[in-house]
Length: 132
Image (tube, rainbow, N blue to C red; front, top):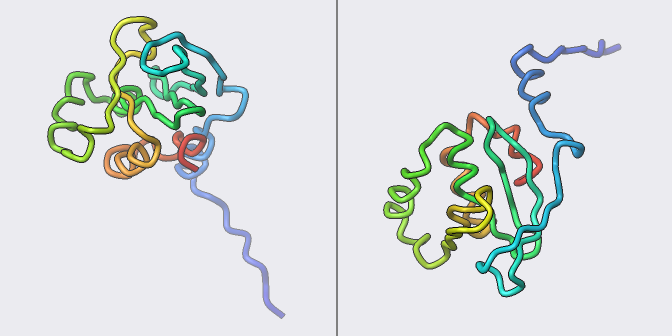
């Protein structure tokens, strides 16, 4: 007869899983902007490290600025990232003016997911609501 093993998770793993935002921490919002033909964005958002992770569930755009700042980078360094990734130039949308929280660089979901694999390892569990 085989004994079943009851492995307990490490304290580090438990802490990481506890950092996954739950549904009560994710808000649904609507922001006015000229970036969209509807003149508003319909988004889900939540905070990581005092920065908002925002994605527009209608267009599929993800707020790259929030991801970038959530891992401790400066907003100004996004220009370097975009310049070093020529495939981004034609798909980037920039919001200037209007509500401060949505200002910055927006990119399509699939590209945001690829970039997050490269530079968001430290917050990977916190990004599960966004990328799965």
